[in-house]
Amino acid sequence: MNAARLWLRALAVTVTVASNVLAQVFSAMVDDYGPRPAGIGWAAVFVGVALVYVICAVIAWRVVRSPVPGWVMVGAALFWSAGAWYPLARDVGWAWPLLAGVTDLWAVFVGFLVLCYPSGRIESRFDRWMIGSVAAAFLVRFVGILLFSMPTRAVCGCVRNAFAVFPSVDADFALGLAWRLVGLALMLTVAVRLTVRWFTSSLPARRVSFVMPLALLLWVYGTLQDSLQFAFDLGWAGSVIEFIPPVAIALIPPAFVAGVLYARGLRSRVADLVIVARDKVDRGLWESSLARTLHDSSLRVFWWDETRHAYVTGAGEPALDPEARNRPGRSTLSIDSDQGPIALIEHDVALSQDDRLLDAVSSALLLSVDNDRLRARLEQTIQELRESRLRIVEEGYHARRRLERDLHDGSQQQLVSLAISLRIATAKAEAAGNAEVVSDLEGASAQLADALRELRELARGIHPTVLTDGDLRSAIQELAQRSHLPVEVRVDTTEPLPNVIAETIYYCVSECLANAAKHAQARNVAVLVTREDDVVTVVVKDDGRGGARIEQGGGLEGLRDRVETVDGHVDVRSVAGLGTIVELTIPARAPQGTEG
Image (cartoon, rainbow, N blue to C red; front, side):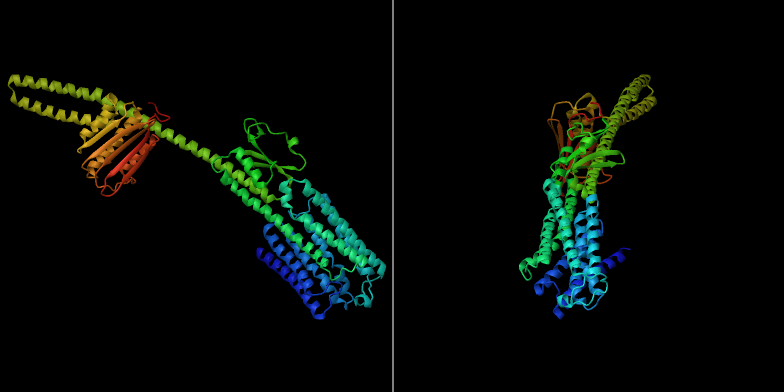
């Protein structure tokens, strides 16, 4: 279907251009231009007008939603050539009257083009009445030529009109003059209407139709000039002013296309509004940006308020009643989504002539609002996930602390009591002189001591008792003492930290010390803990082989996950041969969703 449409348009364009060019070529070959001016200059202007219409038709087919304007331009260009073919068909009694009758048909097409601007549709009653009047006037003129036109051979070199039932030179002249005067009156009416509308309309309306009134006024002047020349033969033939009418006629399709392209440019600028409001739907920013983009300073955006079930301004004030909003020269664009109303845009009525422009506005606002909704949902989901992770960490902290307390107060105390009992039993066996029993009891005591030591290590791994009984400084110093490497510890904070934060720092330092001893082959390690305002910074530096990085499944990845759970950040700087620096930045406050 698309291929057939393209071929049909290409054929129409080819026939139209060929008709205009060949008419001038044949007129030059026979040196007969009829009533038209002769010469290369006029021929170039004549063909140039047709080419302008054809080129604008091709552009219109691409930029205008309706294909009608393009076909109207091609039709005007095709019948524009009828005036050149008319004198070449004088010797054919049935051909020249038909060509003479359709010579001015291009004017009907141009009038339709002016009235259907810019949407390509005849919408108002006034426009339909004008088109009907022009068509009726042309039909009367066409029938009049067929029935009354019978110029003498000496005047035009024509053979007898085969259709002339009532030949009359006076009737033919009167109809010709009436056609010009009626056409002039209609064009003047349209021109005045467009001009008044242009001056009284807002900036968007003037920008969209900025050339058309000027082009139409020039066409009116050209028609007036042609009518005066036809009626009174003022002797303007061969003068420069003869070129004014065709130049004015040639301005109309570029004016049509320029206005549509301008509106299309507005659509591309509307897309930039999504970038302007990409972070958040700022209502004031949207209204000002949209008004500036559409060049409509009076534009207003009313937003739907779910709580009030009514539209409000960007400042939250109640919007005007619908009856008050429907003011003369104003129009409203309602923007809705699947979830209900979003906004109502009150704008200049001139902007409603471009459906695609309003679609672009709606799409841009919908996309921005949807992005804002998705962003809000994502932020809410992230916050819920963060709070959930913090609750898990907090619960894990309390669970480990309870388990450590149970081990310390339960199993560990029982084992200590058992050790005391074994020592008492050993003393009794020694007093009884039972060496074999003494040896067995001492072996059991040694095994019990090992079990008690392992239990203490297990309890310390579950939750360091020193954090409960002491502070972070003591806990890190204990880690340093247990390390196989010399560890320099410096803790420049005395303020107590929330339990979750202190435990996170403790286990991260423990992981770094273990990595330095097992993997980095370091000789020395330094631990520095500082606090500035509400941020604790922990730096663990070793002089090992370096090259460490956070890898999936590695210890540093677990360390990073632990720190990020409490809204912290981990930075690992490690160069091969120059050691490793692990820096933790953790908020000193208790994260939301946890208890200090």
